[in-house]
Length: 465
Image (tube, rainbow, N blue to C red; front, side):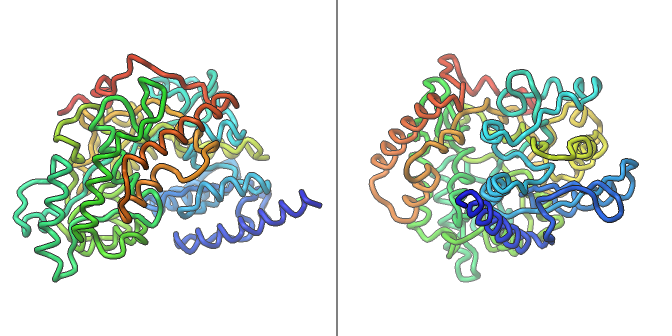
């Protein structure tokens, strides 16, 4: 009876989650979402889940094209999920309603939970050759088996309104954290009467701190990212101290957009598109957003994120590696692979890159003469200082963590203050204790690398300064 109650409850939660996601994305999720099989017309139905909204129109058009042209009698239904995507995925697998193909937002956890099927056996030798130099252990592969392939990477930048900067008498985007705080204050002083503020981040969720701070941290030090020190194999959240203090100062100065505590990323983008925000930090999906989702005539650009002292000691993190994978429990793995193969085709990936929806990490795409021409994309193209970091155990460690997560703890400090050193010490203690539990449970095999230096990661994506 207990098991039956759990499945019923999880199914109800999944239905509520899908309803909320549909409202967020404008994409309809019917009662069959999370299930696949034979349609009335004899077609094999494949369910695909993604949390990406910035490319939803493009992907829908490509899926429509696939449904109309594939000769394997396959029909794909895409559902664009909301910010509760990780929870929805867990609920779906627990209630046996998971999609056939899903975006992999946490490779190590998905692997440990048995969510993903290996795809080696489906890949042709030609396809393996295309991706052989792009595969990363613990992001695409584990123990020699491939579970997901890279497509694009999120290149992170400071996004700023050039006209607002000019109006405030600021000649160039900030290079240091102190510059960012000062510039945000100047912009607010000049623009507040018109509803213009210097800075914003989507603090409705903990990603508000993470989006603003993580790339800055990776560029400002050469030992780690995500609070994890690769050299020592321990968590050291002191890497965020200066950043937390800068964000706290902007809040105290009144330089942040009012209501930023409850701001989500899309409402933030809408405000930026209307010329109400001077700057924020986000990734290379933004050109596509301001072309299709929130068309704008604002004169905006992207620049390197500021660092503690204005120099890049490590590397600017490019988030990439995993993209989509096949549900290990899917009854239609062959059909799911046909769709996955279509999504990873060089033609589709090249068009995706050229239209500015993401920066490709596929050599066959990057080596072509065609480059994206969408407005604003030039500031996101990889430079020498951009790099993909090795996998680290931060996400899987949180499965054993007791108490508040690091990005939430720092967000609280930004808005309420307190003793930051105590916050950092508490995070270090709790995360390192959870890491030991994670290792003991066999959930990660990542260990310290005393020779690690993130500055040595530079130049692998691009040699351009």
